[in-house]
Image (cartoon, rainbow, N blue to C red; front, top):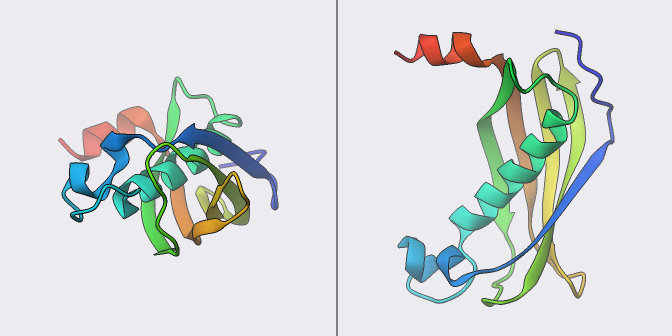
Length: 129
């Protein structure tokens, strides 16, 4: 597959931490702080959105296949956070991102790597039936 995604390209997404993102709400912990599962989903979302800029989303999509991340700092409900997804490696349909999440005070709260594969939607869905 020949895509036009470039090495080093960055996508940024910003959002507010909601109560529904908390460890207590998701059951991954007992505290009302930003949960690791929510941070992981934000990293995947930001990475997916970069790929979507370059593919025909009527026919193609991307699926997450691996994550290696660290949740570095607790973040409170109501804080604004920004995720950065930078293209680290491209190998045909495989795209590896260096991902990080930051507070509006430029404090890194999470970082790592996320790998996605670009797939044909119909073929992929048919393969799981």
